[in-house]
Amino acid sequence: MLYVIIFVIALGFLLLFAELFIVPGVTFVGVAGAILLSVGVWQVYALYGTLTGNISLCVMLLMSGWVIWKSFKSRFWKKFELHQHIEGKTAEDAEQLGLRIGQLGKAMTALRPQGMVKFGSTNVEVESLNGWVDRGVEVEIAHLEGKKVFIKTK
Image (cartoon, rainbow, N blue to C red; front, side, top):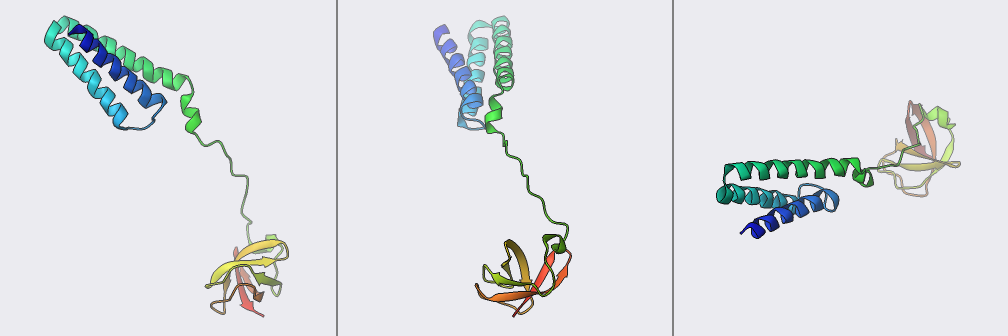
């Protein structure tokens, strides 16, 4: 019976290790590992008494803590972090983009009533004062209001 208990506890540690290093998150693997560890220690208490049960519980807690500590120390979790940085920034207002009232552009998308218009080499999100405008129609800037650009058909 001792070999069965050792096997159950070892399998519990293996599943706990797999949960931390292979299948991150709270999944069936981690829950099964915790259940197996609990059943193993419970069986030690039932078959070998309180002293041996307390010793096995302490050993199990120390080993579980070591596995968790090792997972953080090994920088394993760095594989799951996002390492990209956003370099872009927004313009303070439309005039900083070089836009001016009366400037002509071409609708890159259908404006329903918002959409994208290309002014020179700059694509800008705009709002149509004339309602819906089809793609490819030439438009001009009617007025600028901070970051908002309002257009009308030419």
